[in-house]
Image 1 (cartoon, helix red, strand yellow):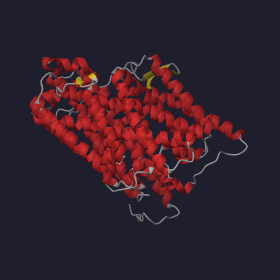
Image 2 (spheres, chains in turn orange, purple):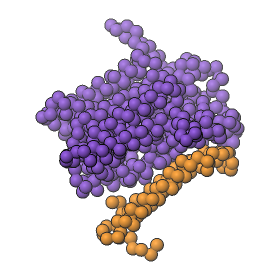
Image 3 (cartoon, chains in turn orange, green):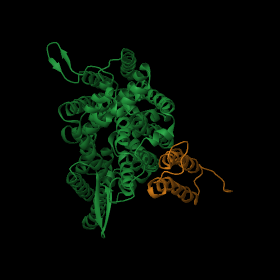
Image 4 (spheres, helix red, strand yellow):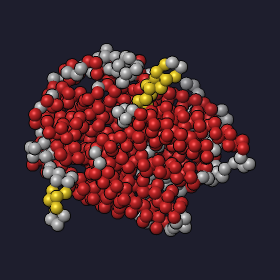
Length: 76
Length: 519
């Protein structure tokens, strides 16, 4: 991560790099739609079966991914 | 149900009165010229990040959601949890696609999605199809908000049938009064009213959720005991994909719903009323907070199972009248002190007013811009346009009220199910349109028509018993949400015919927008 983050200066090759960051958004989509990953009861956390806490945990995680993309692309 | 609790009713009534005053006061908030449609119907496009967050949260997470999602978990188990992945992934779509809609709408003064379609494809018929789909899909949704309100009003023991002097016996009297008040302040304040009320609604809902996930598990002996009370077979999805709820139907339900959500007129209205495209993006990041609350609310369904409300004779009448939709109200009545029951139920009832107001405004905008101005009065003044929208919002709410009072609730649910399948058919037009002018408008129209026909046929063949239609592909039977499979038909028709029509056309269709308008 040595690259400079100059969000506002439109460079020749920067837009492409910025666009690639959008691929990160596929991670939460695959993680929550690939049901076989989480269609089971164990391990439980505080009595809550895996099926439920796994999907609940992905709600803030997905927001985090969106936040990262928002920061990297400089809000454009 | 029969038990009338004066404390709960007082708290409920006081909160209801408070938001009514707020609704009328909202007209003065960030004062604008309400005789302009974008002021009345979009709050002047001046809502910043925080207001938009409350507005969209109040708009998308409706009272009906708060009643129906836990009810589905209560009755059917794991499949009801699809609302959580649905509400998680839909924001990726909002983040990527809808800032473009915001920009082009701001630039050209578009108030509805159909306005954009009219401008992009220069085709009034396609715009009309999008507008009518939006209105028809939203009407039953408004009606269902009344169901959410009806359940909590009945649970408070408020008498529903009242003898009014001069008229006689009126059924569902409290609902009619609530909707009348709602109609009046929406008429006078426009989108500013639900934006303001949404803040109150969210305080009530978040307060209720926090209390519920702490107090109720403590009373029931912890989450482990709650899940132990549920039939283990219901806690996960059936491994056999041929029987609902299988993994494939779960994933397609979540994906199809996520794709459809922002095509609903009330969601687009929320996006367009933002003050900048950054507000739209920031909200896509911040709105999942509501999804977390929704996930916790969903778990109330299992808490209701563990608390044994279904077999408790005190709630038998409620379950008889409302079915599993009574699960959450019964749970609250059992677990909370009176004053907090009033607080929580007010959150649900007010949670019905906010989306009902925004949905009726969105329908009114569609009617005014894409039907009235397009076909009846092309040269109407801005003041006339705003006046027509105000009246249309009254008609839409009256229609929803008649819908729910005269027809069985199951009809509203069935139509809402169909509505989700219909609204997704506008996806090729809207989404492709936001990126390219390549698709041919007549091809998009043909795709839209075939998608609607295919989706409706699938649901009808299931006799409304579900929306997961088993597709037979290469000898495999795959259960897939009808919205998604009919969307594939739509897309295929639209793309293939676009190639054909564009090759045959002497010149391309007129596009009022330029590439720079979208960024």
